[in-house]
Length: 238
Image (cartoon, rainbow, N blue to C red; front, top):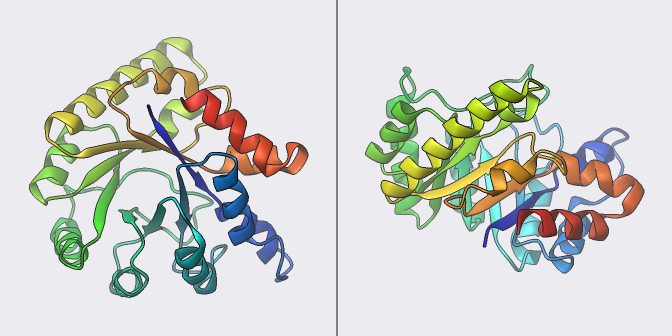
């Protein structure tokens, strides 16, 4: 049965719009767990546009399920992860100008050795380390070579497609990627752009162990309440 990790970044986005103390992403995380979430995900960005260091520290103390920290491959973030010790780290690409993460890591590029070094450092400190990748077999094989604990498959391209045939082709890519990751002995996660309408096709891929979903749930919670929004997504994922 697939797990659901709820990303509460955009609760913090709303708070930071006025630099107030509410809504509190920690409170949202507690409500999400009450509603059946199997984990909580946050992305501590270098520019601190939403989640703050305080949020991460308090979440580490309060989360009873599993805390996943999304972060860029930088020395600062590696040190924060080793200090906080979340249950899992997911290394993601990060650009200051982007609204949201635009794609997977490029392990074929010049930063491959840096990501390998950071992955080893984090694993040596006792952390599980996932890499956020497009459903590309070459990237997945490199992730295995650098000893990643798992891969979170970037589903954004699938989520943004409107043509049924192209969407079907992308589902096949995601299926093949999930199958390869599993065969290589790594954990299989998926996320980005998934919502109440499009998660069903991806949910059918049995190799996927966990979905990380945030914006859609938080958007729904504005009108339906976070507990109801999480319960509805838990039912869809499972």
